Length: 272
Length: 318
Image 1 (cartoon, chains in turn orange, yellow):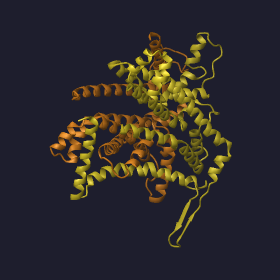
Image 2 (tube, rainbow over the protein chains, first blue to last red):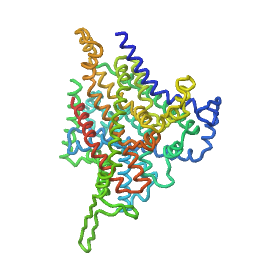
Image 3 (tube, rainbow over the protein chains, first blue to last red):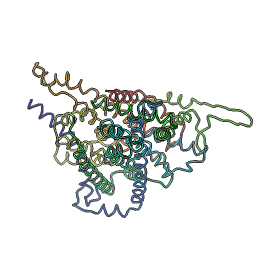
Image 4 (cartoon, each protein chain N blue to C red):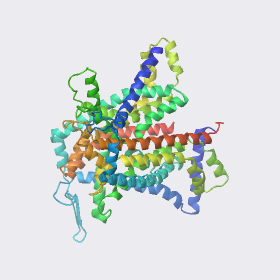
């Protein structure tokens, strides 16, 4: 019994080491003064200074943040609607089709999604003259489509695990469907909506493949710039950029988790 | 009232309320809540596949956009011509390059999925057997990398695996090897990349299956004289099977079409279909051929995708 749990701890420990070692190495080397990425030349913030002087990276980052912000907001609205419809509307015509369309984008290889959306945009432009050319707008539409699927799944999971007594009470008291949703259901699923927004934001910020297909000339997002740089090899500037992004995300996620746990404790009611 | 019956009751009430409303007036509220996400997905998820299929039947042409039209009509002269070309599909089947790209993608995805399972299982098992704040911490540690950039996590491995990278430098300074190991631009690097980036997708379904497992079953097996490996294969693994299947599908399907990992970590001989599609589109500018590659990839993946859907349906019903 003792030996088995040692084996378990060691193999799980190996798993966690595997998960974190590359990230930690990346962070340490971003502070390396030497240009040769593998030779340690002492601690330095040089590459961070270089990073902020690089206009190409800064412009791409601003564009990516803008796209991610709009995408996350749209995806939350559409995804919450879809998740709510699927878990609270009972059976309706075409429910199976909708739930299929919601779950398929989650596993669809990105090259297929990217290519198919690009061909759609080109065909639509030929037929209706919209969207005229490709760029920020088409990237936002493409990102919203796969992000809303994630939001819908999160919202659906939250709704089906939720205690419905508050919704029941509101209905007993004669609330209309719209006020029931906005006054009771929406506040209750707000943790799911917040994590859906954050997840959509990071997925959009991270996407290389779909954005490459549907963007137009002069609309390079941050991942597209990073990809063209790292294709040629490891660069210290990208190490600095990666460290900043990882730290921001880590702080955000830990903060959100802490906040949600606190809220969950406040809302927690004894099971009767 | 049990949770399940409460859910049923509340669903029923929403339906009843809206049914009642339907007779008094058309319920535009309910209608639009269904219609908006439906329309969005129809236009931007479903129709694109129809367009891809249509273009895969056309021929490459020097034009804007660069393909011949499948459907031609003229209302004044009242004719419709349909010109379908199967040449792209025939070429796919005839040319060994494409066939071996599909086969090698499936092989790479299958091997990586297996190793992901090996790495993920102990993590998920440990999480399921710990309690309270330790479990929450482990869960957070698994989820955290999932939130950080996928591209940058693949990039992180470039620094470790390359010829004068961290792993080679460490092993050489320890005197374990005298020549640097060639790890970058090999299939090995691609396996590492896939296992690494898709690990959370495997751990989470495994964990949710193992969490539901009744640990007293293991005690019973032990009392009946089962050795640890016997109780693992006869009790734990069958109980974890729904998680194993879900996790494997979640890793396998996107791994087949993976582009970033083979492009950054793989060599020029690492043939994967996602990369072939990318090159067909961006380098050769052959849109019909890229579409045909996508359609065949979709046909290969339809079965596993349906399996995932069925699994979800069953879980929802339970």
